[in-house]
Amino acid sequence: MTSVKNLSMKKRLLLLALPLGSLLFSSCQNAIFSSSFDEINVVIEQGNDFTSDVPSRRIKRGADASFTITCQNGAALVASDYANYSIENTGTRYVYTAHSVRYSTTIVLSLSYHYCLYDANGGLPLDGSGSTSPIAKPVSPDHLRANAELGQNLFYKTGYTFNGWNTNPDGGGDNILPGSRFDFTEGLTLYAQWILETPNQDFEYDILGKSATITKYLGTDETCIVPETLGGAEVKTISKNAFVSSTLKSLYLPRSLTSLEEDSLNCSSLNELSFFDTLSEVDDLSLTCPQLSKVRLFANQSPRYSGTYYDAFSDKTDYLRKEATHLKIVLFSGSSGRYGYSSPQIEEAFPNYHIINLGVYAWANARPLMEWARHFMAKDDILLDAPEFDARDAQFCISSAFDHHLWAMVESDYGLLSLLDLRNYTNFFTSYHEFNASRSSMSEKNYFVSAKNYSDEGDLISYPTYNDNGDYLLFRANSASDTLQALELCDYTRSSFSDLYFSSLNAAHTLFTDQGIRVFFSYSPRNWSSLTAQSTPEERKALDQEFRASIKAPVISKLEDCLFSGVYFYRYDSHLSTEGALLRTERIIADLKAQGLN
Image (cartoon, rainbow, N blue to C red; front, side, top):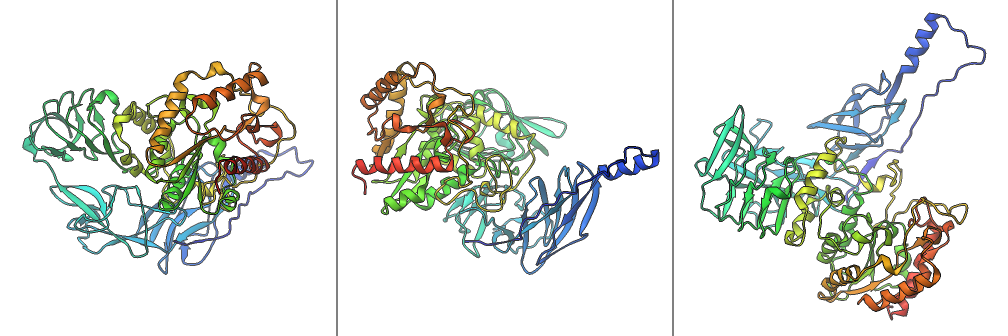
């Protein structure tokens, strides 16, 4: 594992106190006080292996504070304990900027001493040096797997397009998309991969100013590599029906492209598409490609969701991937699972199994999440599915629509997208457009920012908030009384569940059982005070009977055992307190043992 030199966190606020009786000020004194109040101090806490151009800066409240940081002894500046920051790097020198600082504060910098090497592999560095030596870039210490460098910001090769990284120069090793995650080992070198651009004469295009629009593809090859420039102008748009008569199977869109018009990719034979996240104007009307099954998305923009509630999913998937060859139980649910288990307690009860808590955002479509889970599960593994009733449309897999929540979850590892079969989903590119538009107003972050360093409310925490099972670790106090928490009622009645819910969930579970994976069904935990008036004990009993008759997987829990006093919930009526999670875990262990698991 990589390590990081992370200095102890210290935050200091400069408090201004007024003495009693000083209500009258001269105009001069008022001006001095106003100036003092509007200015704050930003201090860089000193540590080993780096120096700052100045130890502190005095700035206007709400302004940015920049420092030039020089690292020594193989260190690299990778992060800080101030939440909103950016880092620009040139060799061992960095420009660190804390953005929109509101209060006087002391900032602690984090250094890394572990690197991945990047080789141009026949290309040239963009810095114009002409050097053929590999470029060293630090890797994150806070993820099980590292993120590769972003697309085309290191090297170029005239007449060729960058096609990602590979662990072997000839491309025979592991293919790694820009920005996506890979298994890091000390001293690893990643080699740039290059593909020859399709000749300019294979395109008809219009030029307006410095931008080119492709109007027709004339080529006959099964693969098309659209160049970044045509006629000396950057390719920005592909117009309607430009590919309508082609027999393409694979299409690569350049980093320069920003827009796909309606039916611009009207291509019945296309089954693989590669593009950069700089493509912003696109939706499902842009592509009429019924055979399109695989996408490769290259990250060229810095991530925005790093460190957030969503970002934990890529880490959880890494935990699952790590255990791919081990016997395991995957806990699948919405945020009720995120807050609802003590995985070490389950591992102690069932020592033959590794436990992975894949609990995620309940309103994200569970269908693609399940497909990702299946990629890293094998015969005799167990899926324990506990869908949430208030998000039943998403949790019971009744829709094939992709959504923007899913994009936020995989922003720090777009490589997960290439594992999906797009023919199983709708709304893929429309939801991508929504996601890209929403994050355009968010602050840029980097892959060194990790969800395990933050609470789900966005507060910086000095110790990991997740364990390597995927459980949320922060202590959650019991509520003071047995009452409704979030004023959101949930219906536990037979009328809330049509046959579509059962058939959709059974179809999703069958994909697991076809691989020899055992599936168990449990109810998600819920505050009994949040049930609707119609959810009477009699109605709940009838609902439980209907689930047992309609769900093909064994229903291992009693519905009533999954309803808890409001005392055991934290802020929301499906988020268990720390004590509540322990109680829930004890019941799940008993339910699994009743199925003969040992």
